[in-house]
Image 1 (cartoon, rainbow, N blue to C red):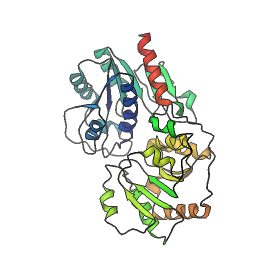
Image 2 (cartoon, helix red, strand yellow; image 1 turned 90 degrees about the vertical axis):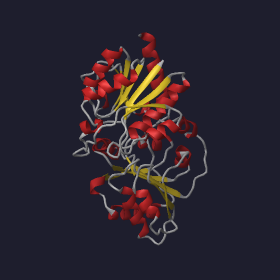
Image 3 (cartoon, one colour; image 1 turned 30 degrees about the horizontal axis):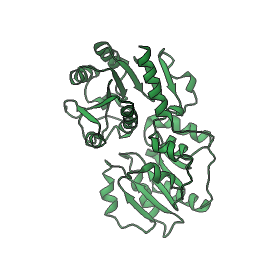
Image 4 (cartoon, helix red, strand yellow; image 1 turned 30 degrees about the vertical axis):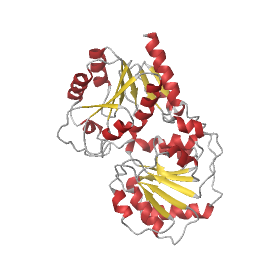
Length: 351
């Protein structure tokens, strides 16, 4: 079975769509699917990274750069019209058994055109509560209106964190007794356009000491990494670009400061308390709801945070350390990817 995943990463899109698709791709490969990513080359793409994971990438033609006008200007993420993108996709793919879309610029029009041309099964991964022309819809987030989402879609919906696309190490580590480091881990996504890493770094530098080690992970495409490692830093702060065994590092961590999004479910799976920030418009409603449930501390939208915001948060953590704990009622078991693969196999069997 040939599976093609249409998704992108860029300095504007971020890395999250590609990273969660990689989780699904690895699981599909284990079930003997042939998986190919289809991506458009652009500044901040992860094409080379995907290839290093042992997954084939079909690159679409590179086009003139289109700059989004704001964070929710999703149409600009595609770099060209949906019609041209769909034509490029079909020309690159030629034949597909399954097409997976994870892209805020791709909607039911693209899906309908591609599905009709290729006669394929189509699976849509989304967070935006839109109309889709697909056989399955996956929305892994916890929303206050979860049962009412995608009301105009008759296809099967896989909704909620029980379908969170988490790598196998998360479920493997969930119930293991792992020795903790005296550490707070900070990660704000692959790009961090609002410079949360820099704000937090400078906040930490105002302290002569902290009762824990603060490890800031900038992400692979974050241009702030080079800037931060060239700055003098106190002994209680370290900056790294990437952590290979991230699930293990997270399990060993006492607390996290970071972005909302898929990272929420990784932290809940391993029962790691967190302070979160909305770094994109589509994270706002989710973050507010998690704060309302009192399962996270919430600092608000990244456009309104500053160095003082993080000075205050570090002071809070210092005052509570080392006994800080949040009891989460969200039981995320880490098996969402397996459930999605099973649903897809059942869909293909029925067809």
